[in-house]
Length: 145
Image (cartoon, rainbow, N blue to C red; front, side):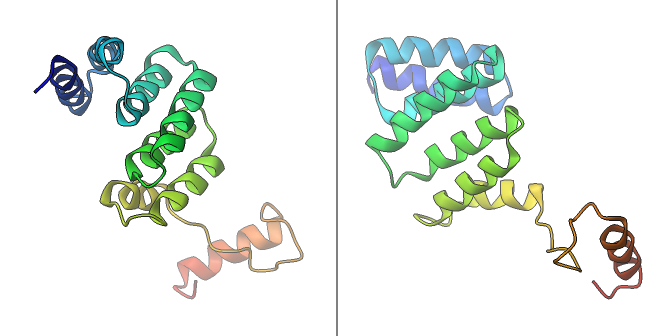
């Protein structure tokens, strides 16, 4: 196992313990020694969480995804970056794109956590229209929706 692999492994362990700052430091050291798409993806996630540099994080993750497009890790991390940035629609789109390559359990879990919304009852009205809103609430309570 190379030194870069060891640093990457330690970074994953730190990330699993929710020690994002430690993981960021370890991933940065590993990237100095070797650059690979998966490492860039996790580094991007840590940059978004710790530094709030969403553009940089998205760019890093997109580059990793371009180099290794069939790896669901890139879609998982990019989706999480979008969630941190408050872009739920982009996150859902990215998660779904990742599922096209592999039914990755963590992506499925993220989508389930986010939940899916049913279409508005009256399609010609906006979702926020009081008629749609309260009709939906009533039907849900009655178990009809």
